[in-house]
Length: 65
Image (tube, rainbow, N blue to C red; front, top):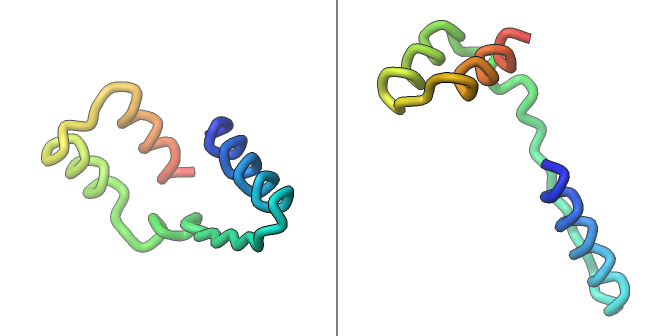
């Protein structure tokens, strides 16, 4: 995540230095998982997509707060 932020800032600074316009669009997905059943989502991620281990634990922690 940090490297993505550094890349975005670097691109913005380069554009400003070159006197180019910049536009940044952001999408807030914080409420995305509020409308789905978390247990079903996590089970599908594990069984259908093969996500497990620490990744599944991280996702579980994320969707459950």
